[in-house]
Amino acid sequence: MFDGNKPLFTRKIRAALSVIACIMAIFALTVCVLFPAVKIPALYAFTASLIFLVTVRKNYVTFCEISIFCFLLIQLVVLVPKPEDFNDTAYLLSFRYGISSRGFIPTIIDILNRGEFIHAKFIWHFLFTTLALLSFVLSVLIGLIIKNSKARIKPFAYFLALFYLTCFTAPSMYFFHFNRFEIFAFLFMLIIIAVLEKPVLRWGIPILALCILASHIILIFFYIPFIVIMLLYELIKTQHKKKIAALLCCTVAVIAGAFLLYLLFHENTFVFNDAHSMAEFLKTKTDFPFNENMIYMFMYARLHDHLDGWKSIMVPDFSGNFSVIINIPFIALFAVFWVNCFLREKNKPMKFFFTLPVLILLYHAIAFFLFFDFGRWLVMIMNIQIMLLFYLIYAQNETVISVAEKTIPFIQEKSRFIILACVLMAWLGPVTVIGPSARVTKIFHVIFHLFGWTWSV
Image 1 (cartoon, rainbow, N blue to C red):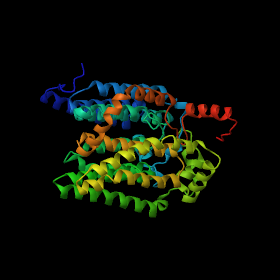
Image 2 (cartoon, rainbow, N blue to C red):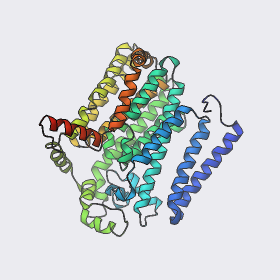
Image 3 (cartoon, rainbow, N blue to C red):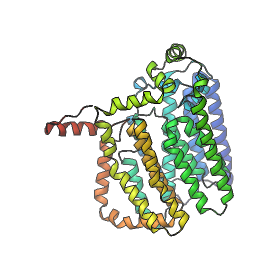
Image 4 (cartoon, helix red, strand yellow):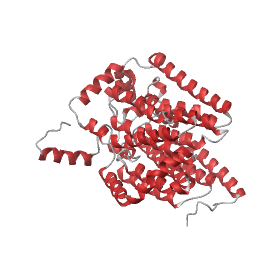
């Protein structure tokens, strides 16, 4: 029924449907801004229009894509918190009140509400529709990579997809902690992967990179270096080196300039002198629950305030450390894979490239020493490693393919064990904000109790 080799539409119908989908998306977004009474239905119409547009443009549907999308969508519906249980002060901190470390997405929400009263339900549905779109884009990209991977490494591609969707740092972490700004950054990153080989569209990468940085300043340690690595790969392999070099320089200049300007001048843009004044004003602007202390931490706090919070969390609590420990074997496997690629590669520039996925792990480590949301950092680390590997498979990098091919006999021999392990990981659940999932925590509480140990949480 779902044949990826059979086009859905003829060329003329496809062009017409693309125009219709664009008009629908623009109309839905306009309605969302101009007609407050139907804002939420307009959000869903906008998301549906984008999904329809992507489907029309790629012009095929595969069973793999449908399966992954359904798997993610079911988890989203089941795991997402109820509107009354959701709150995050940061979603109110628009650039209208000053340049904060994570103000881009709140500014979009503020614009969609025309700077007027922001209802809590609108923010919840805004995030839910974003996650639905993210799930769709992710399923499309994984399906495309599996479809276009060489026949001799298909089992590896399927294994990587299964592992990614079920591991402790699976995307489903965002479904019950769906207030994380990395959701939007991850979506922007996937769009960058999709346009990387499009000669015209890829010139939007500097803007998308800026959107990622503006989503959360911490991403300077995560998705930003990933973008640079991807552009370096394109620079090494392409014959049009001047164009890619210009794109790389433009992207780095935009990010470095924006980051430096933020560090030097962001405090000068604040409208309110302190968190209390801002909290009093926000009471008149929203029914969304917020915390004055969080306003201080997100906008007015200095680095030492975050370091003090890091110490207060880490000294008595083992769970944060455990969320790192439980994922070390997976990170080590990726490091081993890249080392093997480095040893096998003969081309010197490409040999240098294969050192970068390992070096970036050391760069990520800086965030672990400055800020304590270990689970969040681990999800992004795995996103980067897996998406880089997926992309190199899609690009048919012969070195990556040859190393991946060596793992296939083991994958085929241990297939039942691998499936069982993935099912177990999916059941235990992904890491939470800082520590392991509730299921993992309860299991280890029982183990510690049996041995008479103590575990402070």
